[in-house]
Length: 434
Ligand SMILES: [Zn+2]
Image 1 (tube, rainbow, N blue to C red):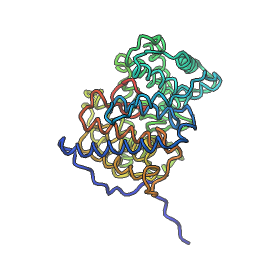
Image 2 (cartoon, rainbow, N blue to C red):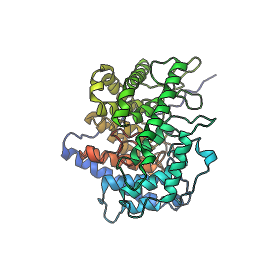
Image 3 (cartoon, rainbow, N blue to C red):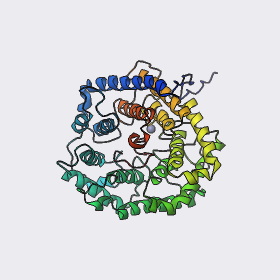
Image 4 (cartoon, protein in one colour):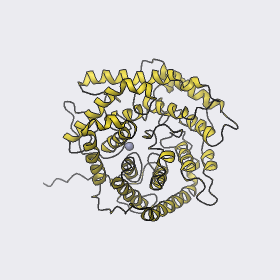
């Protein structure tokens, strides 16, 4: 009797990172990324079905593609003749409807919840139009109702992670207030509101730490103590690191405990961040390397900590040692067969490497990003899966294009102004784009 070997989640990475040490070296890479963006957008716009599936979810719908165009407007401006990213961004916002209050409280985050289109609409009015016509009344109502249900107490607990829960909502509010738009009633994103949401996240994190006996904060999603970026601890902590300083300072010791805990778990597993905290009876089936679960999420968290809190970073040598360890795992195991997406695919892993800003890891990120040109639906390398939503922000081409644009501004040394960070997580502080 023969038993089949388990199918690998990745291809052995034999890619060669391009040289990016001088600006002359980087020019060729930037040109290749620009061409990739132009070709991908041309193909994307030829897909007529794109404009008919009409979902208002940022994760898989047209709104996510709209957010991608908004980021391109900021990062790339008018570098392609005749392409107006702002027009394309506005065209993909669906007609907003007032939400059903009964369902709102289950998912308060804009990524999978019902308020994504409203947030993107308002952010576009601020960024693209300087409020010539806004703010849109329905968008304001949706966000207000969403906030009310998030702050209210319901029998069903609201999750705390990025894609469905409070951390995602917090990130959206931080971005809404990033430009201090006077046309929006500041009560929507006041210090009080931010503090209340942070308080809910922190008290649940302490409860979780007690019930799982962990040294750092712990949260559950559907009774599972996930550790990764989009459903768990790493992502929640990344967002918390970007709240205003007067709110962050008092909770900083517990965030540091939590980052140390994640580093310890990861070092015990040779650089692989487990998808969940180890509890009796749970065995990791395979080492998962993708943003939503696994080491790339810890890499973004560590890069954020180093950038925004350099003193605390320097005080603990384990952080720096772990960063290089997880970056190596992301590079070696990040050429994953799930395809080109930013959530569980190759471009998300590349984005985690980009987030470090270190020449060594940025070069490797670019190698993965250029390789993604060959994956479906852009290329015909069918060893890689076609994503379920092939053109979407989190699973498909739109996310890859956003990653290419982020790489271009990083290679052009525009980091301060123009790097926006991974959608939903940031890493550079809130800049008004999600
Ligand atoms: Zn995923």
